[in-house]
Amino acid sequence: MLAANGGSITMIIWIVIIFAFMYFMMIRPQQKEQKQKTAMLSSLAVGDTVMTTSGFYGVVIDIDEETVIVEFGSNKNCRIPMSKSAISQVEKPEDAARAADESKNPIEQPEKKGLLGRKKD
Image 1 (cartoon, helix red, strand yellow):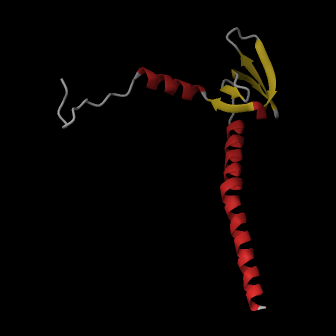
Image 2 (image 1 turned 180 degrees about the horizontal axis):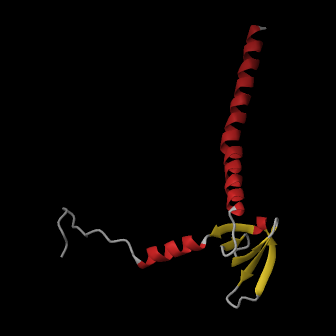
Image 3 (image 1 turned 90 degrees about the vertical axis):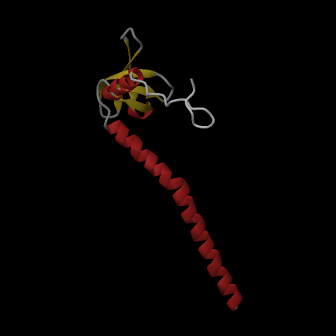
């Protein structure tokens, strides 16, 4: 009788450990990702460059509660209303300007040294 009772407590402990492991490995990261996406969509503004879930890039020209109107292409006449949930990435104009500045000013390359640490000619 005593052995059976100890076995059931051990089994309950293992079940609790398995559920805790599943929570921290599956549910928590998914909740964190959902919060990041919600924050990204709430900071969406007119003029932001967005990428849709289907891979199209465009510029936001109008925002409603649940929909945005995105302008695609360089001819500026392809405007498509879509759900906010169809946006997968947002790039702010100031982020694009910063990336362009970094590409103009490349990172300095370190000096090339030989096998024993001496400078190469």
